[in-house]
Length: 100
Image (cartoon, rainbow, N blue to C red; front, side, top):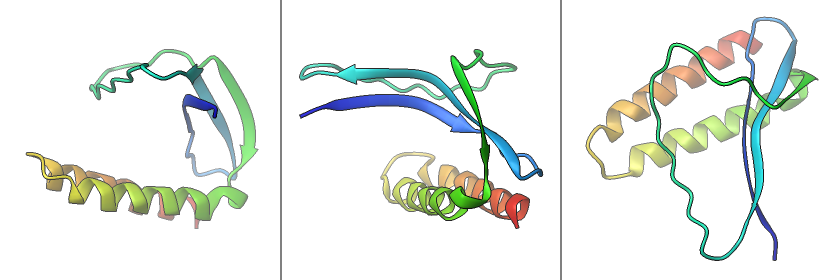
């Protein structure tokens, strides 16, 4: 069995051509631990890889992923979970407006 972790994203501009960004990709093995810390920052590290992509074919995939995240976050019983769910919902709505 093979397991990998990829940290990436996409630019969501009002144009139809965006970029797929990759910061890190690595293979994981039994016993590896992954910690995610979400912070606010004025800037971010440059991605290690960028690829131009057309956003239209990815529309439904991205919207589906955002909706899944929204549902998951809303079901996690942690303090601030509902506020995070509202933020994800706002991102989903913003993304829908950009690509329609």
